[in-house]
Every structure is written in structure tokens, then in C-alpha cells.
Length: 292
Ligand code: R5P
Image (cartoon, rainbow, N blue to C red; front, side):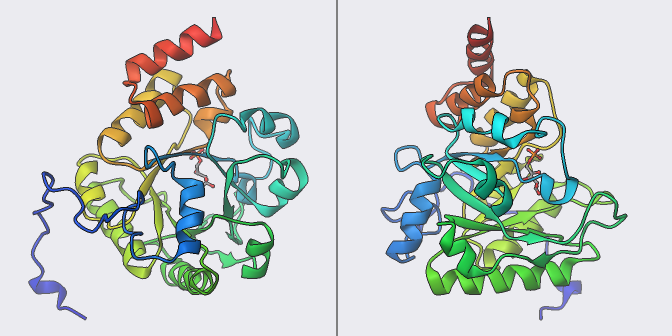
């Protein structure tokens, strides 16, 4: 391992130079993967735009019944036409989501903590690869806790899932969690996203931050940006817009869609930003026009 003392601060991100290993496949870092992996990635990232609108409603895996998600069977199905991917637990999918829906599936495969814990950073792999295959998962989502108490076990979980995914050509989505004592700095996100990519995650989910374009440039696989706590619709669309402008390959939004007073209209507005090049202002106007 390199001596930490002598390390220089990374600074040359070549922001004017496009990703050099893109090849002719539309997903960053995936050109050398096999057909099965590419097929799953194409179920996540639109082949025309290279981007995705993931909709996260996996919160129940540690939060139980969450505001806006009290009735999955009522709230989720109407969103099917407006989001590309369900990010969810197998329990939610099997019990409430029609398998006839065309959406891709980002299957949450780790769990083990609950809101009652002081430290949420200890999880285990709770879903066998065989069940991910049965669910036709397009990727498997693993929570990681870089710099937190659960770092080692979460990276072990990530490795196990990536190894299993590589055996059956199912991508792994490495999720960067931010602990309550951790700063949301670009320094942290550059560290965490790059670690997950170098471990072999084919997709990384992280947060928007200052110098986000540098975080993206230094990560050789697509980053999808988490929505985070509920913002006003206008601010959430600005978050989506800034993320896409900074090079994100999409968003993975939960509360900013399902806690909106108008989830279906909000999903449509987010879609305009991610896939159709709308500015945040244009998308907010579109949202206003839909709800009035
Ligand atoms: C991730 O760890 C959570 O379970 C959610 O998937 C994630 O936080 C995205 O949802 P939200 O946009 O509500 O933060």
C-alpha cells in the first residue's frame, strides 16, 4: 500500500477531455463488458440519452413505513410510465409491483439496520444471487459506508455481490452512504465513488456536491445522483439539473418524487431534465402547467 505521507492532492481532472474509453456503448466504463451486462445496463440507461431516471422507494428496508410510502400498492404503479428503473426491495416488488411493468429493476440486496439503531452502518448481504436472477434484476444495490464504523463489512458485502454479479452478468450498484458525522465534500465523494468503481461496481450512486464535475471525471463508471431529503419541487429540479450539467448519468430520486403533492407530475418534470435537456426553470414551468 502506498505511503499516505507522500501523497499529493489530486487536481488534474482533464475536464475538457471526454472519457477516452467510451467506445461505442452508451454506458461509461462498460464498453469492455459482455453482452449480458450490457443488456442489463441498457435496461437502466436509455440508449439514446445515456441517462436514467431511477425511482427509489426502498426506504422501508430500514425506515419501515415512510411518509409518502404508506401504501406502495397505491403510490408506485402510477409512476411506471415516467421512471426508467424501480430501486426497491424484493418484498416491495413481489408484493406490490406488477411484473408486466417495463421498468428496469435496481434490487436492494443489503440490509440489517433500522432507524432504531444509533449506528446505521452495519449491513449484510440479504439476497442471494439466485433470487436476484429470479427477480430479473438489472443491478444489485449495495450500501457502503466509507469512513464509517461499518466500512470493512460494507466493502466485503460489495465485493461478494460484485463477484456473484460477474458470474451471472448482473451489474452492481455501489451506493455511497453519508454518515451523520461526515461532511458532504467533494474530497469525500471523490474518495468514496472512486473506491467503489475500482472495486468493480458498474454503477455508483452518490450525492451532488461542489466540484461535482471533478467527482464525475475521476469516476470511470456512471454516477447517478441521490435525491436526498425533501426539497421544494423547484429546488429538487435544480438539483437534478445541476447534477446532469455536472455529468451525472441520471438521478435516483425517492422522497422528492413520492413526497411531492404531485408525484406523477414531478416524475415527468424530472424526466424532462434528465432526458430532454430542459433547464430547471423550464422543467418547473412544465410541472406548474401540469398541476394547474
Ligand atoms: C438509499 O440508501 C435509500 O434507501 C434511498 O434509496 C435513497 O436515499 C434515495 O432516496 P431519496 O431520494 O429519498 O434520498
